[in-house]
Amino acid sequence: MNTAIVRADSPDAIQRALVVLNKGGLIAFPTDTVYGVGAPVFDGKAVESIYVAKDRPIEKAIPVLIADADDMDKVGMDIPDVARGIAARFFPGPLTCLIPKQPTLPSVVSATSTVGVRVPDHEVARALLRAAGPMAVTSANISGQPSPSTAEEVFAQLSGRIELIIDGGKTPGGVPSTVVDCTNNEIKILREGPISLEEIKLKLSSPI
Image 1 (tube, one colour):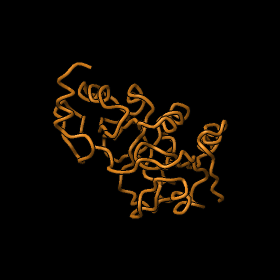
Image 2 (cartoon, rainbow, N blue to C red):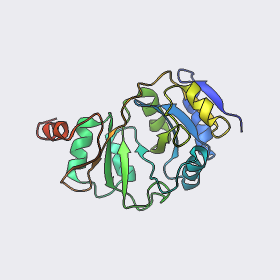
Image 3 (cartoon, one colour):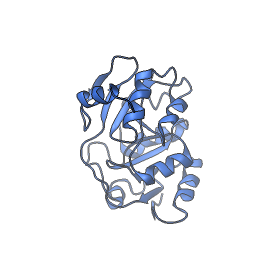
């Protein structure tokens, strides 16, 4: 397949992305960390193709990006109060919250009873997510290769493997998000990142 690149400030960028997604294709786009490649989270076949495009081990769950904290209910269920409190204080931002998943979520996204969700602090990503709904998204690279921070770096690795790249310029890159287990009211850091456990506890103890 041919991989097209469209500038994020193009008037038809989101519409072109939706056309690709609606027919089961994959797109790459900028986030507040690196470029991600993704598909609508409830399209199991499209999510499977992410693993193929990246040569990604199938046992690795794929995080879900959402546009706003309220969208957690679209992919999660019985969401604990602590998860909502963390979302209210840290979304959008570099924090992924592990919550109990909806039973309708394809197992290819997560084979366990939980799913990781995050709101990226990037307007291009959030505009896409508002239009497309929650997406299963992981870094837009061949597994084991450097994570890309430009559209050109995505093209170098995934050209011919995905249909469209939204070019939003260089992303900040840097440290992956902090991953927090929010499945019950006792929070636990699963992956260290930009936001510490101490900062989480401090903000949770203060009013929004």
